[in-house]
Length: 268
Image 1 (cartoon, one colour):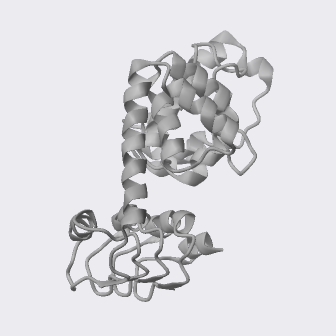
Image 2: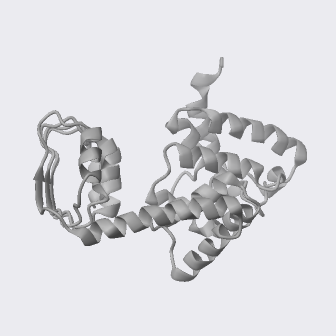
């Protein structure tokens, strides 16, 4: 629209304003304001729709404000679901974000029981990425998913992936592997799906055409200790993902990659 170029600045401005409860419970204000937030959420630019999150860690954003049971929620979680769906489907399907919404588990589970699709998908993602804070919450989350036909199907898919991962860990395979130059993300994915690599400790992707997308495959290598990404298109997004999952990694070569100073902070 005509005002697309305003949204990044508008989102950042609204992100920092502590609206009083009187405003958030005022019918006319919240009706207008929800349209503003919806425009931010619908914007395809991550820097825009991420402004619905808190401006800093520990600070509530619009996701929390519109959460079921919160002061601004007057629609049984409809706006909350819209925000959550956008974030999960775009840029926030990450362990760090999923851990941050553990505090919203009661609302997520209630909406999931009502077969709310975005809440069901969020709960499955939390299981998939091991982003549930304690065993009791995990058991309750599983029970919630098993309580509806849709949830049961989604949970079954998570179980299938987890079983495949456990089998991969148990089967073993080579300890060292070097991919030919010009290999792509798809080549790596096909290779890792064709055999057993649960024991793989050393992987060289130097001078290949892999990108951050290959991180989705790398995190399936639990024994990986050495990873060479020299002269690839690997960037910050991939580094963030492997930093959360490859706990045994000891040597990581990032020379001549797309990783920035900001990306390196994920290793700290």
